[in-house]
Amino acid sequence: MKYALRRPILLCVAASMLSAGCVSGPAPANDMASAYAPGQVAWQGSGQPRGDWIAATPAARGAPTCDWTVPRELANYRQASPGEFIDRTAPLAPGDRLQISLMGDDDVISGVYVLDSDGSLALRGVGRISAKGLSPETLAPILRQRLVAAGLARPLRNAVTVSLIEASGVSVAVSGAVFDPGAVRAGERASDSRIGLKEGQASGDDNVTRTVSGAIRAAGGVRPDADVQRIYLLRDGAYAQLDMSGFIHGWTSRDIALASGDRVIVPSRSCFDADLVRPSALTPPGIRVYMSNLTRSANNNAGAAIGEKTTSLPYGTRLLQGLVAANCVGGSYMQSDRRAVLISRNRLNGRSVVIERDIEKLVREAHRDSLDPFLMPGDAIACYDSRWTNLREAIGMVSEAVSTATPAILLDGAL
Image (cartoon, rainbow, N blue to C red; front, side):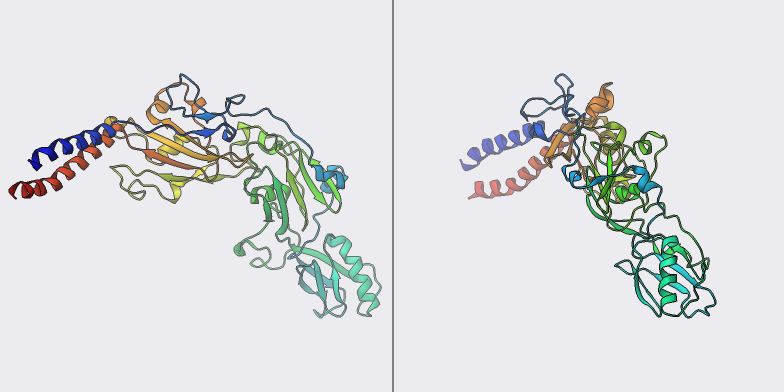
């Protein structure tokens, strides 16, 4: 009697598990304000899972109207022409190495000096002298005057010479529409690329990354909403507005060497510019994307060949390319009914967005570009199994449940 009652219950559970294995889960719901880039919102009739969007559809499917404003804090600074900063020799900064030579000196005062963290150098016989913000040419007469006053040098015009051996990295602050705003080191060099350590005495150095563009790259590069025509450099109570769009579009742009304590502000245009989503002197060369592909044929990421190289993608990679890197595309056609989700974040307001795509439709249909968003640094991709795989999993679970329950039923019936 007990066996007869349990068998229908077991069959009902099995049927429920099998039917559940053939059904896809609901598409993610999002706040409309979280849409950031074109292709994130699936339009009606596209055949892609759209999900619930709380609010009205934004202009241009996620791309708000472009606009820009001058940062308010610039009202406290004097506006200078870019030439005021461009035409200057790169100012000395903490960590720079200098060769100081005194006429007639037998290496008592002459030698290599490194500017301390406050931008000063400790000259033998005369104490500390501030060199921060000066050039080697303007520092030389100051040293000459101090050495003559101390009776250590003759009052000759060229009694002291100063030459730059190595320009070190400088600490600057970058804010605004960059991926990693904050304090950065622009022009920092690895120990094996230091100037004058291997080749002997050297004179002069052009640290090509101790520049505004170098500081922007050190801050993660500009975001797609950045205004690259109006980038601001702040120094010593003055600011200059720089048009650096040439680094993106391929025409001439002047970079500016930085001094310690400089600030760089990259305003936002409040809209997505696809031209900024590619490697350049102002954008990141690559991005790190998190991937998950826990399918039946690959029970873990290692088995799915998802490693460091596949998750480090060129900037400008789209979702479909990322899905190929995650091994979510291809294989048996019976398993082609797979779906994927992209987990991203709106860079303007910090809100998260989760979108879902039917992978096979994204591969096959001609309008894929309008539904295939760009990947941003820190995005995550997750692939879901096909209905066939889900059904196979459900059958396996039913078989396992029946196999486990049968001995208990037999024993119970024998009592």
